[in-house]
Length: 437
Image (cartoon, rainbow, N blue to C red):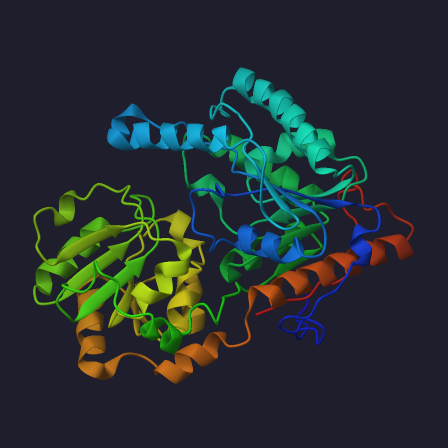
């Protein structure tokens, strides 16, 4: 059981186009229940990037994240911000931002831990999803689940559809409020999926026996987009121009559950002559760094501009919160930092063990601060060349093509054994899917 170690297939070359995979022979598109909102997240998310690639080959309907946690009024202004953002997303209705790719926001009430609201959500979401499929001309979609709260909708829509479960995060560790519901969702999806995708090695190792078609894949990265030489030529962004060097930088959303603001507070106080620059929406409580002059929160930047900022960093940091949610994570920003050739200092997380040749992994706050000092003195782990080499060739196109080829193999194996690839079979296609690292 579980996936075997296979080398990357030769057909997954950069820019190679495949008109149609056999796995879509009985499907006329993909319905992806996404893990985030297309309109409010920079596109560096696994499901978004893979869907962009697959949309070049078959129609894709991307359903924005089905919320699984009700915002709390205790969050203050963030409560109103979250509600307003969701309403604006809903107002966009069905959109077609890219050729072959459609985006829709499905209305639900994020009270999945209450049975009445959960049942109401399922009926409503199924109706909305089927309607969106009809409007986009998708009659028999392959189902892709990146947000586990969609599992009961998928149950009702299953038919003979192929199901991909994207287990790229351990969602049940994110919110105690909905933990029980999300555990049930994960168990059903893991048992009934035709293919389960992992990007975290430790999560894959713990769970791969649960489904015979478990695949460990690597994140991709847009190497051309994060080319440091090209980014430098774009010039220094105006809001960075007057910030004193050296610059220690971070990009990504700044949330209390994911970013350790206390660790940042210790670092900025210990290094008063270093400028700490943060790109991304500030959702966390900034109290630990309040009033400290060498901290700059520049807000969210368009994905197209992120490399221009990153190229001006002297060092990139990953001040991850030490909790079970982040323990099982594998942040895409790590590969983007590496593509920019930046020295990196990170708090511990499980996947970091695979990158110790190119990043400095700190065990505590003192170690984190020392790592920053050493890197700024020119003693960072790895070199520009070795860091970029670590992700060279790892494009999103390759990742998407390899997943598509694996789906094709799983479906073919099932056909040859006389089994259906529908969701009703929980122990299907017992071939070794492969590992892409």
